[in-house]
Length: 346
Image (tube, rainbow, N blue to C red; front, top):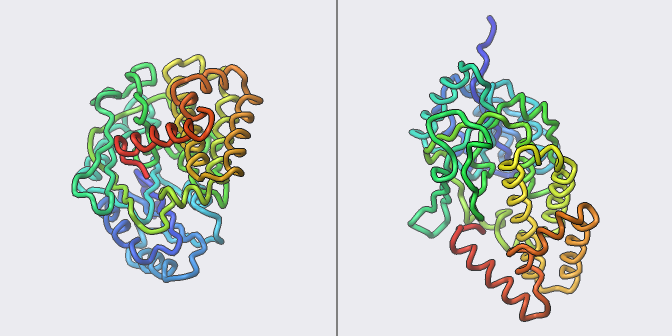
């Protein structure tokens, strides 16, 4: 008997996730037989993550796969998910996050409908919700004023993306084959590779669809979480590594990107915000060593592409991140804190 091709493959990177991964998996099981759930146990050692993954695979053999690997970090687990995916479309859901059932079923209905169309859907975009610990009011990140609704569209049809409004890993579902054809390979043992995941495939994305539903619930507040500011500062070298990979990619693709001004501008804006985050974290750490790393990062950008450096350095955010002296650095951090309150990150 030949198995029916799955509509959607969902990878769940897990590392010592026993305490919360069940909520994630259970929320995804509502998709039934159209969905393939790939639990990637990334070398967990401290708990029963591997056992929980195997139990789900045994209980739901036609839906859940358990893949065990040596620890390689979040990016490696995503790579493994892509390699093992058999679904037409692909999504990543982190093990401490979950999806809302009603929105999830709408997403699957939409994918079914679009999968049979004349044009191949490359990327589906949905809203996500910040489930921030201790906050009753949830921040919804939506795209309804930026992206057309109810139709397939291209980058040329997008409205202007404002600062702070970006397509994140939580927002997207990619066509699986596109992720393979674009050669995406996330670096191992590196945090913050989700930025690469939603950056490098974009020049290959031609057809987009936006479904205005609050699908993804992004949990913030777990101790030691990678997006915690103190944690990010302690891992600043990995943030810089990701930043430089994105600079390299953008410069390498620049001439191709300039053929589509909306896509170019979006990717420029995204690179700019990542460089701003790197810079302000280096300032916020307060060490001379990290202030030198900030200078080195901007020198790296200048060496790669002088015109790109000049535009970014003299833009509003670049200027704010390079104000001279202690008082200048205080202003930079103050601006960053205002952005934190507005956009609810970290």
